[in-house]
Length: 441
Image (cartoon, rainbow, N blue to C red; front, side, top):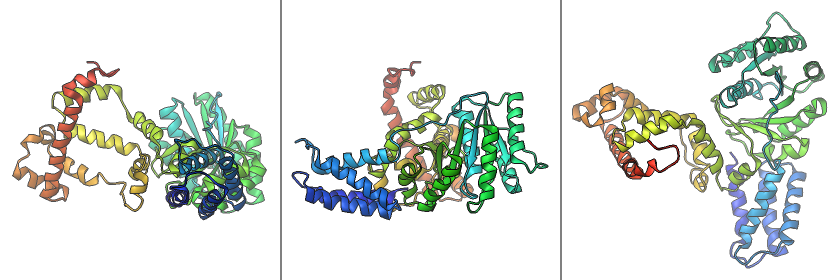
């Protein structure tokens, strides 16, 4: 996401490269390119113009320190203004209450039902909540079935009443059900339409009035660009929603919706969908997104994703195995599974400063580990535990079983041995890691 915008902005800053100071002339030339980059990213013209005017005002009114180059100063100003444009700071969804009620709204196909499942999964596994999903789309049987499938996958109950065509009644009964069954967050998935119409708006407004939700969230497909912003404006006029959810931000999107929607409706973006997996949901942090747009990476989010998969007890066991040179392919496979749970590989790599640009034209398959996993799964339990016993005939059998070549098996075994040596060296035979907090044996 934002690759084209990042590239265009980087080019615009080159105008100031080598300049001794910021002047009205070189700022005007730089900001002309910045405005073009924003417009190309499908940002509303007025918003793009106001944005560059604010940047110009700050740039010309700032005394550039001797140690800071004009180009660096301009990047800093643009970064701060981008973050402010997107809301400035992260805003959480209010899930306080017994139960808290969250009402979902949006057009059909925007990703409401999928987001409802992802959000329930996040609340259950990361916030310690006991959510209830409510199927209030009485027009599309597939929506009810989809919600049930999602609920089953994440182990969250789903309340539905296929016999009723009254979403107000269904939502009310669902809240009673939640109270009786100890569910502390009720997520109400409502019907969408292919376009905004009066009947749709009246119906969801009636549901909101009846259940008085903690928050009403508007879910919109980021790939629709300015259409997403216009739809948000119309929904907000009717519902006065509390926050925006941008889905499909991992797709071929120019980013205009993310940059414009906050200014147009004056409501914060709270979450962004970054993939199809149920774990592919991120809290929206404007400053971190500004970092990524300007090619600075997002190390904080990367560390947070890693910590979500981190298990202190498992880490201690793994450290012992490494220090005793007992790390094997079962451990290697376990590490691969944890990395895969963190999300899209290319998206993760782009969080490392400088890597996003390097990977712009590189096609990284989400199944990048598929071949490695196939080779490991083709090993016997004994071979996984003791890789040293894998001789020539065993390598041939593993290659045949995994649909790979002996050369690929050899390459993996060599990489595995090199990784073991590196980990042993970094652990200093265990001494280094024993000095770290929480790593003492």
